[in-house]
Length: 381
Length: 156
Image (cartoon, rainbow over the protein chains, first blue to last red):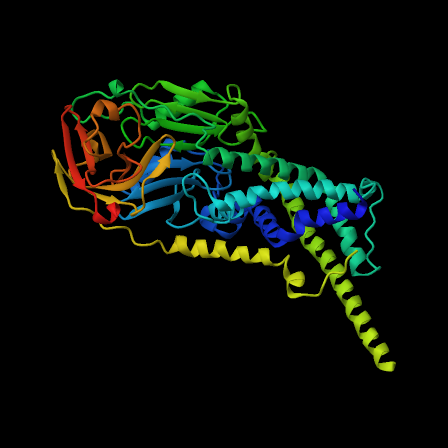
């Protein structure tokens, strides 16, 4: 292929969808900081701890919500960052679905949110553009994850066009004073060269999201169906109550995995349902649900465990991808790096379009000039 | 290289994808303005409970793995959720026997004391002889059943 053909292919990989791509990059960049932005803009979401108190255990937070809302049914508890409140999800006679923002240090309920949270809004907007879900798939999720194909195409063709791209590391040079086009071209090339690792990471993780969507759509389970309490375990009698409390279930889980840091605790929804406890651990590359335990509330038995040690390949990929995509591996510092490169990537789609735009504008100006000169010459004759 | 003609299409073709971004705003508006739920069906006495079903929508059943299901809210007018050992909903000519229902959690009543939900086991297509069957087992082992006829609009 000639250089011109590679160049054309590079344009076709990104130009036709550049606004959409740019929007996805910007929303993803903001989503990286969704927890921090929530902390910044919503005082009620901050877990302020001036007296340096230890975090209260999850069951205590549930008790706090149940004591303040007499008919509350807690369905789930989410543990976020240490500087954010814990989210206790519940329903009540007057609250169909509420999220109690409980300060895990003071035990105070700082807000009851009954709408959309910024964190889930940003992540949904970035991941599936708010397209509705139907039978396990969202067209938006396909659209977003399919960007990985064009991103990898733009990267490969870009590297072919930009000969000796490593000079962007050894001799970086941005021509500021040689016109708009030189400046845009240099910014685009240098941004691309410095973002190679990031482009690869986003493309590969995006490809996984695409694959995951295909599997969901085809009803192929990555995780097997959650276990169900055997009917025989549910005793007959006078309005039996499961003897295992959420406190005991958490103790059982922590005894099984001593490094477990619970992030999601889901209560049984019926008498044959289990406590579902998910959390992160000492595996830094895995996400916050790398451990999962299903605990029988009638017997205290651990019906199923999942951990990085016993996952199959697809499950491992599923739990490795999010921290790599969102840059949460190393806490705030990696998030800052991901945020910066997210901005560079967004800017690259804009500079790429502006370069194309200035090229076509120039061509069309030249065409108009040639046409007017031709007409003048005709008139002179 | 062939000269590109200065047409509207050539000037704007790469901007058209931006129009897609109207959709997220439309979907957000739609999510914030949910369409009214279908009516709650008549109350039925099911043993010690008085129960009303409310379909989530009037759509046909949807596929969930190897089953077809249809979602309902279950309003317990009399009696308490804590008095139910297990409960199931299936749509068909007859109520499925409890020992069959117990094999899986498809069709099981779940949720909170405030509101119960169910992904009722359904046929792929509704027929006039189908009914919606609720089966509830209490702690003493007694089984209580009730049924509702399908709305005419589901059969059209």
